[in-house]
Image 1: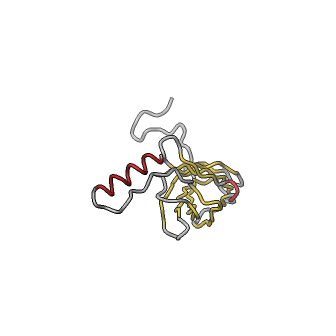
Image 2 (image 1 turned 60 degrees about the vertical axis):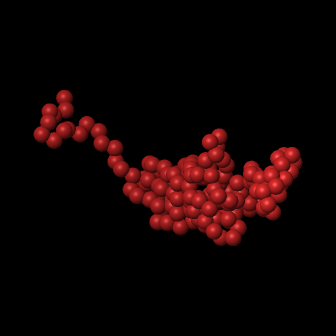
Image 3 (image 1 turned 180 degrees about the vertical axis):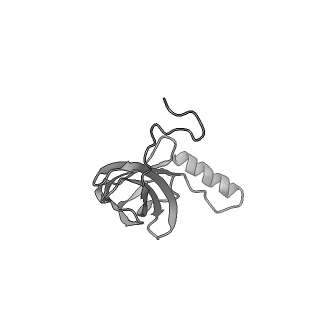
Length: 148
């Protein structure tokens, strides 16, 4: 790696430039401590200690968390995580959700997004909910053949 940096510096100097290109780094995905807040209309809360951030084999961000419902009925949950660096600038988003979240139940949710353009220092999770659809069974086709 030192040879590459030396060669790049020599090449830049030979071109009359004094600027040395930055070497690519595989720095950490998150800061030592990641701040957390939750917004949205869902009757559910994210268990803060359950949140993990990692890059998968393709370089995409994977965020996993546990979500506990406090709703009276089954709901469908959508989550958007807005990710920020230590300066408070947004560096990317991750999205995901879960259907059929039972009242009082805890479920694992996975959010995905592109590789962040910096180190994650804080995240705001927008958790929204809608009533879970009721599955249809044995519904006749309108103006069609009635079920047997």
